[in-house]
Structure formats: structure tokens, C-alpha cells
Amino acid sequence: TGITEPIEFAFMFVAPVLYGLHAVLTGISAFVTISLGIRDGFTFSAGAIDYLINLPIATNPLLLLIVGVVFAVIYYFSFVFIIRALDVPTPGREPEPVEEFGEVAPAPVGA
Image (cartoon, rainbow, N blue to C red; front, top):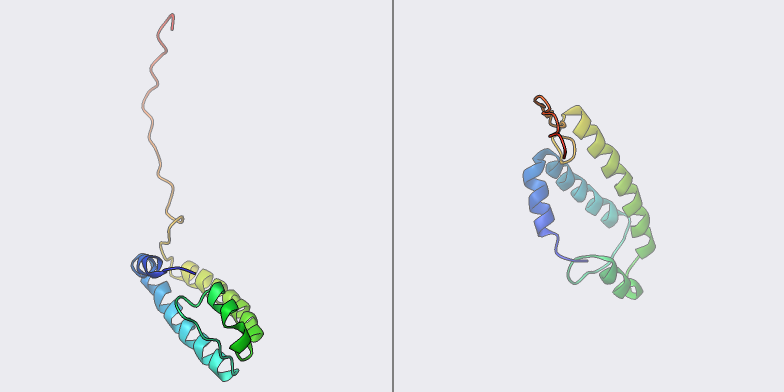
């Protein structure tokens, strides 16, 4: 639970292709949950606290956890595929900088 906008904006500008895929997968997951008759309200961020507060009045709330795990797997493999296929420059995948070293000066005598 919390505010995700800073992460979303960073995500959008760092990897817009992945952000587009995220938008599509989010829409598909909403369609799947509605099709399965899952109804679970939220007040602020749709996080764990909202899930637990609304658990008594939700419809098929445990099925939402299963859908979440399935979509986590779909997200992982589709992101890995797109990152590798399009060589998306994500943080941590940059090439290591090669440092050039000059000649090493001898250590001073008596130091």
C-alpha cells in the first residue's frame, strides 16, 4: 500500500515499451477478474490493507490471489522476452565501463 506514481512515471520514461505492455496486461487482468466474477473493493491503493478490510464483503476474494500469481508469472516471462528480444536498456543491463589505466608510478622509497 502506498503511492506508486513516482515509480510509474520512472517506469514510463525508462522503458516505455515495457510500460505499454504493462498497460495491456493490466487491462487483460481487469477483464479476467470481471469475467470470473471477482468483486473486491478498495479505498486508496488496492493494496494488502484494502484487500483485508474488504475481505468480508468481497466476492471470490481468494480467486483474486490465484489470478495475481498467474499474472505475476505472465508479467515476468513477457517482460524477460521483450527485454531480450528488443534489447531494452533497463537499469542494471548497461555495459560495464572499461577503465583505462596509465603506467603505474613506482612507490616512493622510504614510504
